[in-house]
Length: 258
Image (cartoon, rainbow, N blue to C red; front, side, top):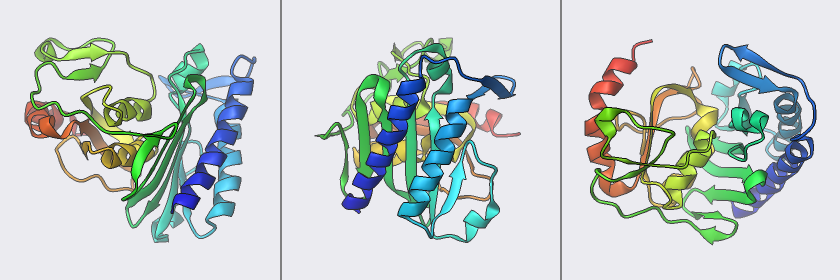
């Protein structure tokens, strides 16, 4: 599995170089839906990654933000779960908080996860049961035991969470979860329906670094589901996870209804 992870990392780095080469270019961009930007680089990377990754594991299914979902993936034991550019807003604004995100999911759980964040000079990788690293350095999550004072990547926090500490927030949710894996943040939470491709690779990184990672209700996350979605993600230092679930429970219940 380590050799496979190295091959995936090489493919992610190739995609990252292409994205960096075009970063300052004048390229087409549009909105798939209001507030949901995409650009021609997303689409080019999606095609590149699909070709490279499917050649690497031909019997895998495919789930990507920039591909029409083919439910045939549900019949596959292994599935590629890919976001060609996680954090497209930062990419379009010339900010570094974006990454190529690739996960190989097996029987509903990620077994290899890679993030390539070339604008930050970072390559993150994890193998199930084999730990997680960034630029070759082993990752360990923090040891915080009390929720008040916990560091949260956020531009601002609601009044009810004024006892938490905001820290720098990249647009990429995968990189924010990576901050928990690296001990640079203590808590990342979303309370909405979100796509599996946004979080699959980062969830494995955080798990392998020792973080507690669940959906917004504290339940186990599953991947390659029929909808390709989960309600929220909650990644924390393990000592505060139960406290975070309790604090967010009413907000999660209010938000889960579509």
